[in-house]
Length: 332
Image (cartoon, rainbow, N blue to C red; front, side, top):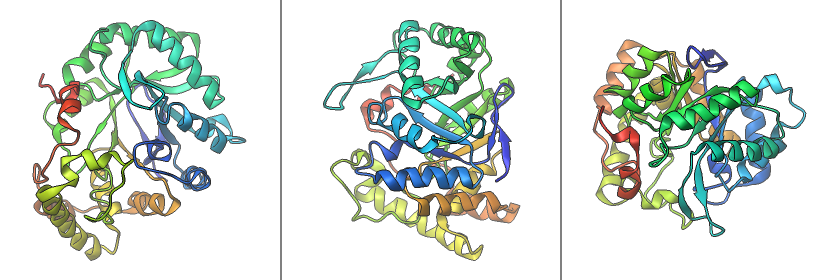
């Protein structure tokens, strides 16, 4: 696999990273053995960036990753960990805490669950509405000095917040949703990151499976949070699936899968962008990571833009209450 550097202060990683959230949470039941096999397949193919959150499965995801990484040299992988979300025993979200004390507390548990002595990239999952970003970044910077963290990342924040954070400590990368369906970062956030030498870790590159080429109207599960997304229901879903069929025609012309085409488009937007593929099965990883060997021509990119123009998809990426809490959706 090719290599990319996330940002001026970030480590070099495989050009496609593995997002592990779905192995523990949000998308319904997952098979533990297959999840571990998928992590192994990703690493064996040249991927090095492994992304998780301490609240994915309330620690389950970190322990799963630790099991999968057992015996692997520590320098062979880069761990990206998000923190801050609070959950109750019923797994409901009950708030957010990115205070300096919480930073150290969450980090301690992550180090123990993952079985490592440092986290490569540590990041608040969201902007704390009460704690200034400067305090959060300052606390992580203390952990960098102490050797427990190698680099500081951000997640789902605005250009204004990115600048505030970068004034305290160099920021490696911003983790944020970016795909053919979600392109809001192109206006302000991506230019700000490039000005500051901050890379992009793009999640949701397949729009949570919507543009994977496999989604159908019949797919749903009571434990799958996509049933609450307007993109996956009603007329919006019919409209969006028609867009996927247009993309499928272009993918077939290049003799590749729809997922590879969608991931390759994200990769073509700049070498400072590393897509995260949220695979739970080896077959999913193989389909998406095929983008590494797919070079899109100017003609390909123009055809994709015509088939899925910016703003063509219908529906929001999160329910209304969650959208209201996203600092990344704010201008400036």
